[in-house]
Image (cartoon, rainbow over all chains, first blue to last red; front, side):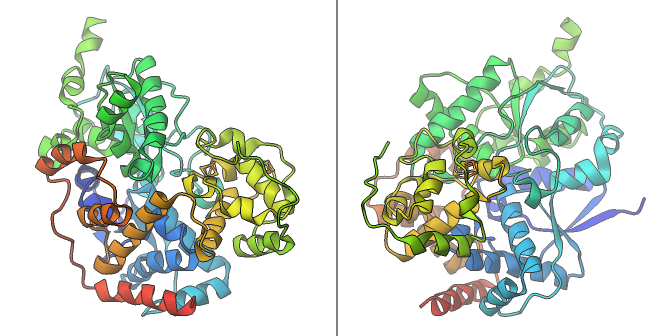
Length: 297
Length: 185
Ligand code: SF4
Ligand code: SF4
């Protein structure tokens, strides 16, 4: 098989609040021989605030990056972040579907966009192009005995017509990858529920309620950890876990990983490359328990 | 829940405008309630999303545009995913925010202030500068930062950069915003 190679859009949060997602994504892809070519001088996709303001503006902010990727000669852009994914895909689909819309977008840009590349999540290519089998072959430290719930968040696979990946009601891609790494994946009924998204700042009460529900369920199921693929979900569940606990009078201490961190761990990558020290809830007790519980059972 | 006086200013052209901008056929909605049942924010909405759809069909422009719901909607797309009539309800909610913004109706000022601070940050730096965004938000809303407790969790880990990331295309991004304003004047 020739080496897998893609244009890569890291997204703003990877430079700050989700830097461990960015680090572990790069380390994991390198270990799996997947080439991520960063789009030179990429800019913000506009995220929710842009599409909540205007669809042409939003498509222009995203479109600039699609144009830069096309200039690299790449026909597929990968991003780890579901929010960036939604914006980039929406921009691409609407421009491909309507010349009139594309013209309006091009009016806002310095360089008009020609070819529109495909956009996929890093998770999608790990699952579809490499596959759980390809991951399993490289596992040297299986996550035996680690019980996890996989939390996909609301937009990674939805709406299905836009995302064209996995299932909108019961996604399984992360489940299969986690199982390939040796973890025990518990059936989690809230896989695609919303965590409160970007309301943490302006309406924290909403996040406390929604993220609280997710943590309660994960705990009730007996999970050792939550596995996520979205910077906003991870931040609400991990960084805000203390706030959730005070608001709801709970005492959760659940580590919340990016799936790339756990896969990287199973592949034996150095801790420093996975950014485990960037997580707020200490993940080490859960990681140290790996392999032990199974022996005891 | 808010009650709506049906004899209040009925605006028949409102639904057509929203249909055109969202490219969705709102008259297909038969009030099955799937969207409301799926919506994670129904508990916090003043008007449930299926009722927003009904109010548009009956021309209740003001009730819709002055609702909290259109600002609290997090674009999670549960409604879109589960609507049996394939209405992209989340896109409709997006368009309602666009219209409300243009016509000066903003029920949830803090949500809009956060969006505005975010976009200002992108306009200025090309990428979001998180600390700058928070400072701007606090300034816009005149609120004490309710996330003070998070600072000590993030700063020592180096998770919040104290300076913006500079990109070469910074001015190209500012031009996108400028042209957008000119187009919509
Ligand atoms: S799910 Fe669709 S048809 Fe049903 S109430 Fe909502 S918008 Fe109307
Ligand atoms: S997109 Fe908005 S209205 Fe639709 S289910 Fe999500 S929060 Fe509710």
